[in-house]
Image (cartoon, helix red, strand yellow):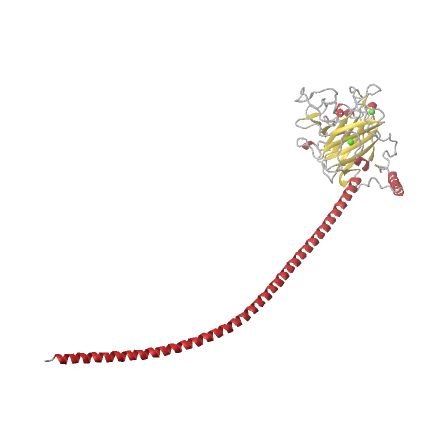
Length: 486
Ligand SMILES: [Ca+2]
Ligand SMILES: [Ca+2]
């Protein structure tokens, strides 16, 4: 186990030692860290190296910065953004006097607007991925508050990591609780820790056993390797497969504990019918004395799980407990190592490197836009010049046309002038012709008048002749008549 060649976890931590060179470590309840941080900052400035991690803007203990890069929940923090996020070092204490085997934990958080990602790392000298039967000691203790489990080199329990999300709006005042043995009866510890029925929490419980193994080990079920059927609830005996490594998820208060996915596993709590399992993706890798666990969950659960889960929202702060169990040292079920309540903010800020890239891209886009604008202005200028040229061309054409028209006019005028001269000459000729004609006409008239006179004279002469003839005829007749008278 633990054979993940790509995983290069830091060396086993020592108290007060920064496991992440170059990354500023935030440690709760340790005033000296402030001085150390300043020293690191000064050192970084002196070395000319940019600070890899910006101080969190908010006052939250854990600030989940935003990433736009893909995340693989594989227990390997190879995503660049993880190295950009400030780990918070938590001091852990036992949930019973037999707990507290894990004394410190490094927690980082991120989100991408759709899912939250948690990276938990804690020292553990021996990897355990199987659980022997629970051998609980001191059973006379009410609620097993000081419960103890038998463990030795051959009998031990699965190592585990857990997160409790407080579902109330205000900071909780109850004692942190963090395992799947909550609720169920008045003797269980949630009620002994001051929890009431209205104090609710969502629990993510990752165990290094079957749930973690995912491909290529699936299909399998529950917490037992090789089990391929549901073995609790209505689906008992039916086969199911598990799509990926997971943690199990539940809701608890002082009265009970409900695990999502009816029939997923056998639990001392209750199964919650109608809920969907496997909304928590989780994968843990043990290497070199260190567990590295990545977990993720959608910010808003599926509709059927929503009534039992905390709806996470960017920009808001929540309260959580982080815990681990070293099964080799008898930590199991209610015996664990846990933090105090820790505030977790889902920040609007990108991780520093992505912010820098975003700023550079924004600057490049602005420059590109400015260049585009300049290009457009230049284009407009060219177009305006073209328009001006066209106008000038048109003007030139108009001018040319005008010249041409003018020339044509001149020509026309010349021709007109010539025509006028010709006309004048013609007119003069015509006048002469007309005068000649008039003269001829007058002569003709005169001749005609002479002819008329002659004709009149002839006519008169004729009339005279006719008169004479008539007189002659009358005389003849009269004479003739006289001769005939006897
Ligand atoms: Ca990863
Ligand atoms: Ca262990």
